[in-house]
Image (cartoon, rainbow, N blue to C red; front, side, top):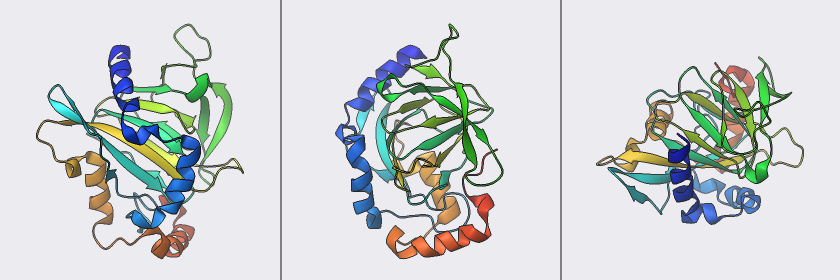
Length: 243
């Protein structure tokens, strides 16, 4: 697992989109918000863009490592738990996120700058996840600061620059939280996904999940921001819900 992580992490960092400074990514994402197709129903993917295919795909042995950009338009917008996912490497470009692991999969996080990874507890009301005074540990029982395994059935906080590796069929929830006052209420992820030979970009499991719940007729974030916020106000369960 560690060897495969290092190989794909090196490939990921070589992709042109990841040359972007995470500190600048938030401003760029906000400026380009109208270009994203944002889920507007108060259901799975509400407030989250349809994964957009990026240039810079890298051929691999039997497949291709295809990057996608995913924009989060509001606090507590979330990517739901999806079974049968592909192997992927996800980098947080902007915003503070919760990665909540399910009962299946393998998760490794490499934190930016060697910072410790903090656990979070899920609660049934806003902000839905709160920081716990506990940190992910390595195999020696010390606070982990590099290539850290994340236990199943747990939640951790990820910040800009952090990179997460998810084995195929790993089930998890991604939620933008942004509890820090200095962080804007949006987020941006770049997911580099290992597609099997012959797969088209739109066959990525996240794209298929988005289409299944949101479908056609989704307008830009600027046009639909208010209706989404109102819908969520009457259906808070659709925001950042966990297991």
